[in-house]
Image 1 (cartoon, rainbow, N blue to C red):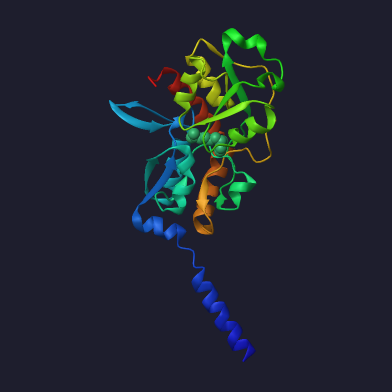
Image 2 (cartoon, helix red, strand yellow):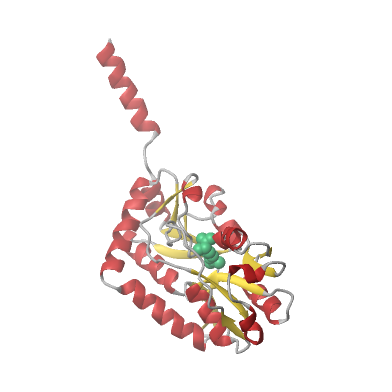
Length: 261
Ligand code: ARG
């Protein structure tokens, strides 16, 4: 009786947890990536053959994954604070958006292997650069961060006394910094460098922020999607080893420097 019930239990168990994460996507013939394309060089919009197109290093990674799985790639564009939850509502299959694989997020989502290490920096107005000598210099000042990002916590934890303002759009945040509605903006380095290169009046302050162990970027996957995660990890490992990810980032940086937006 014991053996029979154990066998039955195993049978039921394996049926319930059957992982169709990969076959579902193969059946559909498309993999949809949720993203917030306001984050050059990882994802941003530019005109390609006269058409507004999402491009960037993350886009190249997504394309490589779709190719490996043998399906078409699609992007679903949204604000960053909706990117992760779109996996739960089924609006997207996976999310790629320069997402830091934090312990907190890992409670709700699975993550691929990480593919990019990033550090946080502070952008300020060039004319006021000398005012900022330490993380304490921001006390009483308005510091912008993108809504739903780890930079909200970074700014609150490390810039003591600052008034942290969360905005949905990075472009708007930069405009508010330029017109003095904000005094500083916290962004990850490659993104900040892109904005500074395009805005003569802005610079990166010479102040070091601490980054956590889990700030590196990874693709977010619905929990329990083992087969899908294995395919994604295979591609990421390959792209990392061949140095292609660095190449994607560099090429996207060049493209963004010449792009209109
Ligand atoms: N790495 C940060 C985070 O995961 C910021 C990501 C913002 N990405 C974007 N495409 N806007 O919270």
